[in-house]
Length: 113
Image (tube, rainbow, N blue to C red; front, side, top):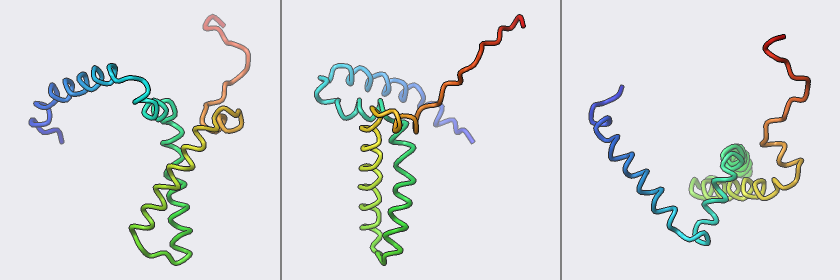
């Protein structure tokens, strides 16, 4: 259900996005290095973090860890660590192949037949 109050906020949201873009363009590169790294590797970070978090939390629970705070912190650290490592290792073809759609080689078929 779309509420009329939400529709009224669309111009403010668009202005906020435009302002954020303008501000981000003025920030020196040395302050945005980590953010740009995350942007370039967002697919890797998105795909890799969750399975790692689930596996680590299940292993920790199986080992008897019952503190929810410790489980969360360990899962987040592992998810960030592994996904960041994978993003850094993308310079190797075998790792990059995990996150890139393969090219299909073959002959081209024209519309004319």
